[in-house]
Image 1 (cartoon, rainbow, N blue to C red):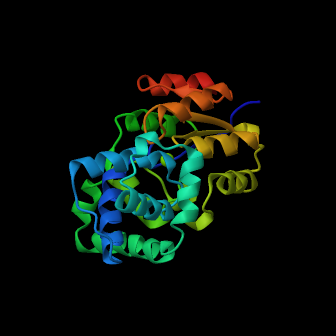
Image 2: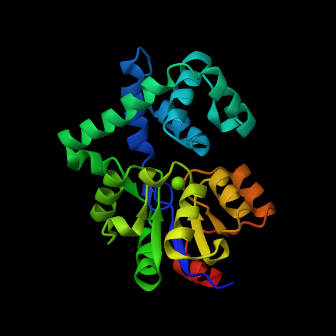
Image 3: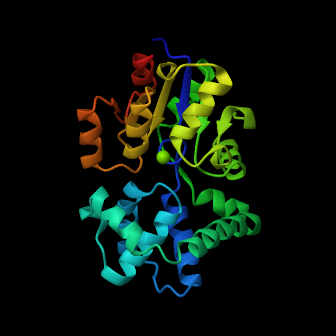
Length: 247
Ligand SMILES: [Mg+2]
């Protein structure tokens, strides 16, 4: 089946938001009585924990597990992470609200600094070329406003109509269904480029041609698993050519 639409995840594929999320998490968590202090070691552990994050709730579980158990997220499995989700369920709503409020406040207070806390992956230039040549959409679980702002800052030309965001659904499977409806395409006609194993797995299961990038926030164990399931892995360089090879 011929690919008609390329859907691009944003955080972990184009935008490296891990530092921004780390700072927001500290602010949101400590506001509700948490005692995490900024350090290089904490930042490193946070980056490893990012492999399990599906929504901002997960930053609450990560913070709790670090504060109360000194959890090292280099050694955690998906199953163990699910247990942390149950164990530290209390307080997650307050955290979630604090997190998004902190992001909004930061953006309003100092937009330039907020933008700078979001780095750009070097592969972004390949995605610019892809989006100029092929029908491409952004599929992000981030809020529309901040995604559009960051895309513009990074030199991407996307309008609201070219994007699926948190407002369109909190999972990538919901986004794929919306794309199918909006553009009258079959799942097999969508190529979805993602950095998170769980999302690649779930969209792949619905018939979408999901691929996983080797940068971003998945870990090696997750990429190995994806490969075994037949999900292609995009290597770090010549990304444009690799994607064209999948069309
Ligand atoms: Mg991502």
